[in-house]
Every structure is written in C-alpha cells, then in structure tokens.
Image 1: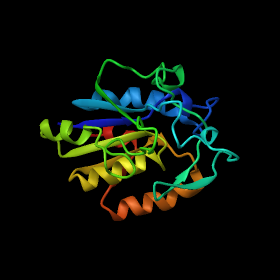
Image 2: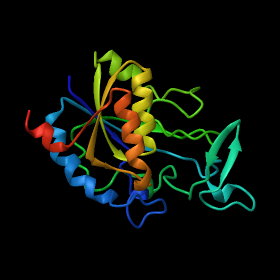
Image 3: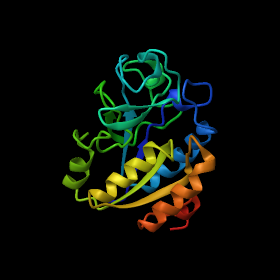
Length: 204
C-alpha cells in the first residue's frame, strides 16, 4: 500500500505566519497533485499548548532562536506557533482533505518538543503513527511537508528506526534553513532514503 505522510502543512508555517518556512505555500498544489498516487494519505499537526516550553515567550529574558538546555536536551526557542485550537494550527485551507485518512497530533506535552511525527524528542511518548502504519501492513512511506530540515527530517529518521523504508518528495517539501538542507539530504541518502521529485511519481 503506497503511503504518503504530510508533515505539518499548517498555517503558522506559511509565509506571513509566526514561524514561516520560505516558500512553504508553494508545496500545497504539489501535494494536492500527488495525493492521488497513494493508497493511503495521513498527516501530522503540531498541536502545542500555550505554555509550551519550546516557546521563547515562556522564558524570562530569552528571545526566539535562542538555545537552552531543557530536560537534558538542547532546545531551540521558537516563536509561539500552532497553538491548540487556533487557526494557525489548522492545515492550509487549500490542502485537499478528502484523502487524508488520519491526523496525528504532536507536541502536546508542554515540557518536551516533538519534531518527529512518530515520537517526542526524548523518544518517550509515541504518537501512535508507527503502530497505525504497521497494523495496515505498510513497509514503505513517502514524506513531504514542513519544515524539510526539521520535522520532516526527524520523522524520516524515526521511520527508519521503526523499520520503514523512506522516500522524501523534495519539491513537496521546503526547509526552514535552506543553506543547511544539502547536508541533511546527504545524510539521509547515506541512510538509504530515496530523494525524488513529484515528476518521478507521475512517470511510474
């Protein structure tokens, strides 16, 4: 069963949002075009409480993109984003919703961030995504979304740890920090991740 996972294609990560991914809006039509090539489409959502410790606003005398140690791990401090129940946490309004079978929410524990769609950053809490996919007999997953160098990247790493083979659809993804993305793609390729464009799906 060909499976596509849409990572955090949410309003707050779009241009004009509090944590904008450059050209993040450009992936929306690409995602809509490719959904039909897959038997199963699922999505993830950042879903943070207002008091989330990854928000710079919840730390005295700290600013966005500062780094702190939180529960023994390095934590980047982000602008407030994807607050539970807010319009900024919604999936982009133009994403075709009808093929999305399930949405897995992450980052709900105020004390720990959750970049991956599978686990929190300490690998203590599962979102249930891995079990859902395995119950359906899925072994290969395609990823796209935002941001390619953070939440998509960590989701791919965890998918490998969970025994899945992974493919990144590059033109259906965008990185937050484009100048660092080539190094990440090299790392993923060394781990056996396929990196393709949407055109390669159409050619099959």
